[in-house]
Image 1: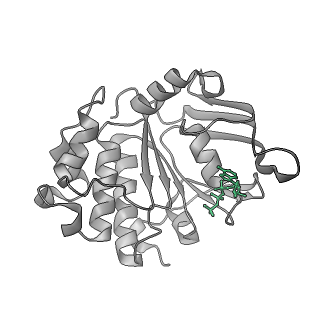
Image 2: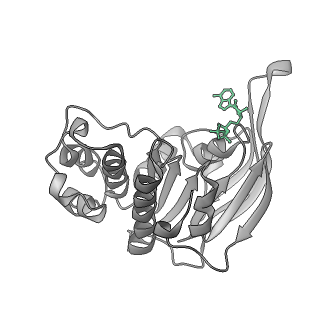
Length: 242
Ligand SMILES: Nc1ncnc2c1ncn2[C@@H]1O[C@H](COP(=O)(O)OP(=O)(O)OP(=O)(O)O)[C@@H](O)[C@H]1O
């Protein structure tokens, strides 16, 4: 289990009235219009919605990368919206892993060294080799990013994100740059991280079929939640068609 991961059934996030406005006056963009949402700990959650509907904004605020304009977001019992910049940095460092569409690996470092960059500053890290084994790359640890396929590079990015044993893993379009077969392999890794480390996993995606593997599916539209669906049955990532 990840360090300090709450038990399944507890609530990871309690979000109420969360609002984000970029800019002012006539140029203001209302990215979030009072979002209310509970995210149970240990779930794999998929966020779907049209481009510009506010998915990344929500992820960035509860991931501690951006600030809300109004409303509240509680992580366990911590009010993220009230934290100082230093406290928010500590929250990110101790609890949050990020995976983005483009892998942001250091090209001059090997897979192992890319993961090590994070484990050197984490509180309770995994061994980089164990993290790379978890994503099926134990044989490629000394390869540089340019020697790896897109899917393999994304798996290194996932290994880097999970090596610090995050309580929560945020993934923004993790399969956006991948073909469907490679994308399925990456989703399988995310599912493994969810099940084996007990991390809560939030995936923002345009690949609507990903919803079939989620515990919970959140549909966004125009800065608000339109619908939340709890899946009674789920597909294995390798059975997803897209
Ligand atoms: N830094 C910013 N400054 C101004 N407007 C922004 C900023 N970031 C996001 N927005 C706007 O906020 C709205 C929500 O954007 P967001 O990226 O959250 O949407 P999204 O649902 O993730 O979209 P996509 O699926 O295209 O990534 C959009 O209208 C976007 O243009």
